[in-house]
Length: 117
Image 1: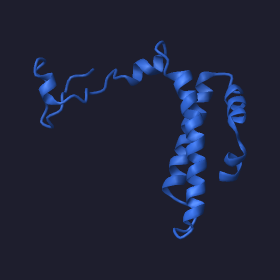
Image 2: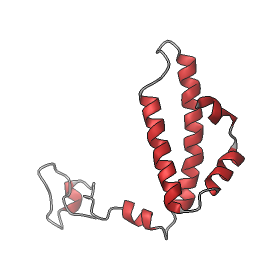
Image 3: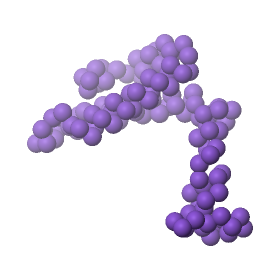
Image 4: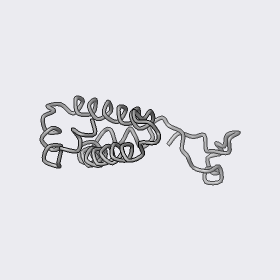
């Protein structure tokens, strides 16, 4: 996997991303890729004393993640994007401290604001 990612440049990433015809297909691909990276980084395939190989693998994953982060920003985080509106808090508790929410009177036992943003 690291060898394939090492051979890819920005043009390869761009052409691959543009090959997806639907936003949902692209989103599925990105989510599956991030999950794969998480698993491969968390459960290294190389012995712990092969530090250089672990670093090479992680460098290539980081380079790919940076490329995909640009895609995420351009495709899914524009101000008109529904994904952005959903991710900004529809139905999630506000992380504000209890002092910031005293006007609403919605403090919970955890000290965090319990109202929904």
